[in-house]
Length: 145
Image 1: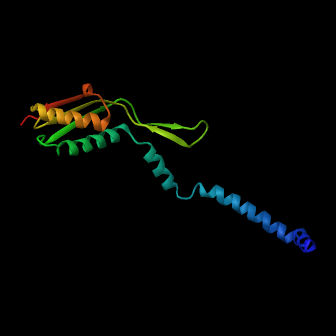
Image 2: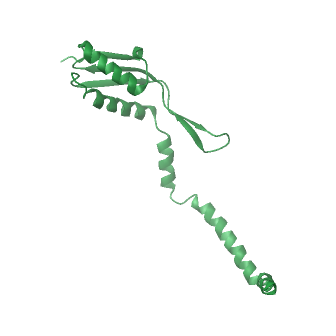
């Protein structure tokens, strides 16, 4: 049996097939980086999540939730953020270890029930709990008609 294996490996044809297969495999690895570049760009765009998008999404989520609180009525939210989304990577790597969200500097809520102390307390509690910020960063005002 070892004579058979030795005979197969000594033949030049098998050696050429193995070498060609190896070269084709390496070529496919290099080519795979350039196939579907649109998918790669979409991934980069998702990671480049801007502060503006973060703020706008958070504002609309808060408006939807706050307007459902009893006594609030129509509500508008203004959110101020300090910096952009920050990604932390392993040293000399493309592996993302964590994502640090922007720091919220303040929230202004203008609503129809903004003159009622009970409503102001409910909205303040909802905002501070949802965003994990102090009450000093939240301002509630009455919406003028």
